[in-house]
Length: 299
Image (cartoon, rainbow, N blue to C red; front, side, top):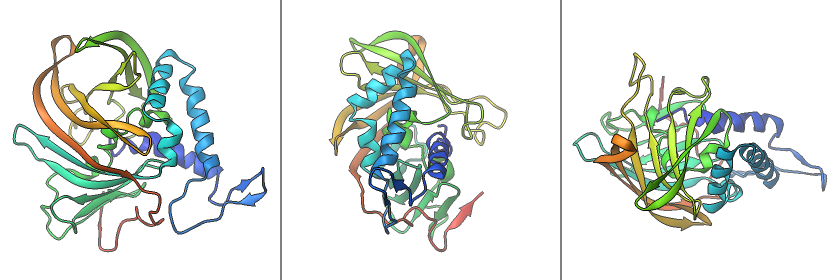
């Protein structure tokens, strides 16, 4: 998916914002400085500012309004950020014998950093610091896949529609569609040319006209390390299965992925994804997302 690299959509925005609002920013209403602590903490004023900017931007277009309404229906962008980093298990199971990817992971939704821990070996870890990808494992085969690519990819399953609040995101309202006898608004998501390492990725989201909740995500993978001569993989069709509500945020209960076939219908069922053990963490130490001692830094 847009990876590593999807981090740039929000992290670039977060970096710009953080440059303007330092960790010791002054609350003008009370003239009291926001003091640093040993845990990750995002001042309420930062959240309010970022949400206000996203609301203004999204509500300036019909496609953006659909996405903003989806954010509201799924619990609200303010709640998404205020809840703090999200932790979950993401068990990606291809049905064609290809490499499975199963890890417990914690993702900083504010600045898009991540730490993954193998579901079968707790000492095997990898992540993204916001600047560097890293891996630490006794066995070099602990992760038989591209961990740099995968560091933030799961966020682009579980984090919709909230991940669309950053810079470099372009939205287009397509013709509405019907899926399983329900009516959906359809929004296509593309990215500015300099956004991330795979700006040619796209997503097509189905948003229920009545509930404003997401039900389907069609997408392509154009990661240049996989497609060195350009191009992309065939489009996939991911159905959101069920739902779970955690700290006010409504997310899918899991995912089923198919190849997209004629008339944008799901074809062969190719990947089962379990999304479990979901919680938000408010007490993570500030160095939680740093590369640990002894980790290998990936180029």
